[in-house]
Length: 510
Image (cartoon, rainbow, N blue to C red; front, side, top):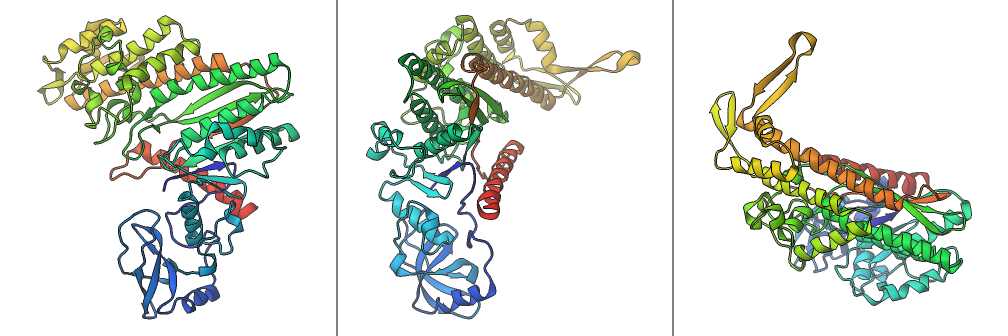
């Protein structure tokens, strides 16, 4: 089950067996083995099923033979009989096997296996939020209709005091407590959101942002409340733009953020929401030009080729362009054409002029056309644009309002500055280098476009005021593919570093 960690500190991960409390001492190992004799019920680690329930059949002094007994948090298939070492087995206390705690630190037995079991028990009851001290773990329910997580339950949280005490764990509670600390301490706060791809980080960020907007409007004059609501509306309108140009479908997530986002949500002395400033990090540039099988490039390309203005930008059937690189043009239940309309409306609400909106989509259209341009070898050191696709250079140039001849020349040559003595030297490119140069051009253009969109949104939402702010970090998800690009390794490193930060503060310093 994918999960999100929401909070300033701490981490839980289920990828490595063993106790989250650190390495076991020798006497604890002996105790483990003495309670895991033949016939005993145990948790054991199964690579495809994580911590599962089983019965010990035999112990040869080195390995335990364990027969699975059905429970698995990851698969429905029956569990096989396995041989496991003492680091992958844990005795069961049947009196607390189905223990259900709002805070995992209250578990009678604190171990990866019991934590996973508690999360499983709660998840099957449609309780997807669980605290770990200062953190809330949010398991993606893939369901927006759970009654106690609907917006009409929000007032129950809003009417509590400085801290949530009477209501269940929730992203709302995390936002509520952080806001209370902001007002009490008059110090900037931060909410970190991390997790694997598909865990629900982006949705969690939206939930937190919506709650912060609501709680800041509880008191004050009607004019102050309306002003705060207007700011919250403007911030929320940025989502279709940032998601459209920074999110894409992966094999694990139909709406995966392929960039990092840090938002400073600004509040006045009285606690009213007055603005927000967004910083974007590490847009995954390789996804601009291609995608793996069953994945898509950025949503923006599909919005345009399926949108109502596709013909305006000289675009035809989607399957003829790079948007079909992953053989996955459509996402079930998603209407890209309608999302184009929604994105254009959001641009208008965020202050984009008609000329600017047109410029945005012209940039995307030009990229779409140019990526269809191929190259033909002349000799070992040079190439030319493939005559079959040469016309697309003119189409891209017309859309971008640039000189077609200059663009055609730049695609197959590179110019080197040799300094005052050597001057400029024009060198022809091989087909491989020409393709790399074409891709580098569109990557740079798209990345700059996304940065400009973020800055334009900030002009609307960043008032420059506010005495304090709550930082909201929504980082791209950890993913492990059969082949991982350098950018994916950077993304994973960022996630591991953040998780280490959690561990340091929750399990070491605290």
